[in-house]
Length: 570
Image (cartoon, rainbow, N blue to C red; front, side, top):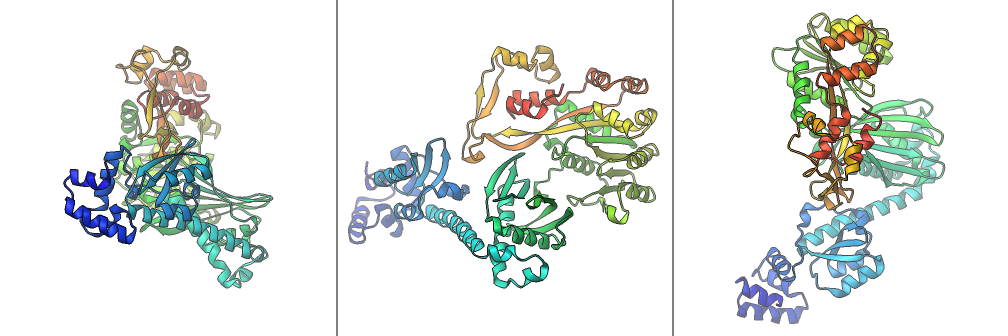
């Protein structure tokens, strides 16, 4: 059915109005749909809904899409504008293209010929496509123009070795400033956690870390390395003349009307200075313990441990495993008007209302140990120490926990049971450890499966055996309703929502070891880490592997993530 007939059939226009529109179409040469919209007889949305229904082609609301400039570049701008279309996604050899006229066979053939990809057309409104064209090709043009400008001035910038010379560059600074702003704002909009700027012999590489995995973002001209480094140092209030020593600083900018902090670390390497920026976005901080991914029983154990008025609770795990978020969430749950909460951090990552936070400055003698001593004269109820790194900090923290204060802190260990050995190796007596430690929690982060493209996989018998999934284990995981017949693993196919990775976001896996009388006896008798672990499991602790396995069985993550993150765990 032709568009006009379809609109009549739907009762949106009558025959007389259609004839008027057709007459205007002959004079102006525009599409019938565009003429009807100009006559205010129908809306663009009416047109695309009719087309979608008649042709059985999906309608896409482009206002919900962030068009990737890399995907947009697969079709030249002049062709996209001529045919009123925009590429929005690529999966394998299929290119999804939003079109005003999905029956435009010439346009589809042109794109398939130049890209070597199969085109899957979808319908979108003309105004949405116009805006998407402007945004996508504007970003492509902006980045291309920026790189050209950088090429032109890079040689001059490279020769600028100090602040005075850089200050003399004048208008040549503009492309560098725009590039640095683009790198930072793009990272925030894409939900990135870290930015890596890495100089090598013949290239400068910029990578983003998203959901724990690094990927290439862009490669500016190598000769612009010095200028980009200097610009970021200036933004972070660092010494741009110092290129031999590591430096740390902070950058604060506004992105989409919200303030975002960047923690900046600069490290001298062979070919220049490597810069890593950790993004600290206050709006992304989860401060509710229930939102972090704890298993029900594990969360109950953790909450009961930190409910004690005194003692020490330790959170352990590698860098970037979410320890700070867990500590902040615990602090927020404990922060009431009756309690005086104080923290010593290096650096202070997020500002928490109602909590007294101290930024440690080791260069002037304000380290964790000095801050802790001062805290004890401030009538505290709850103390958080960013990290226990040495004997002095450990001793003061443990003594504070034994004199009526609840102390929260972190340690870098692989799992909860091995933390005991780490503290004793620092020089703390075993009896002080058993007297003061309430609980030790270890954690990791696993990537979550994209909800939009998740599908089930029936596990093979050897896979079930490999992961040691037995009825007893399922009872421990609080999944008694699952058995071999109704058990599934899950994966993501890859879609627009997850940038074709099948994974989107991360969630924690946890093990919480409560210090029981039997565990204390093993520690005092010089028991091994394996002895402590066995007793902790007997006392009800779910291991990191079990926590991750539970999340794979309920469809939150994949078994590949379970193996990747808990490799070597029991």
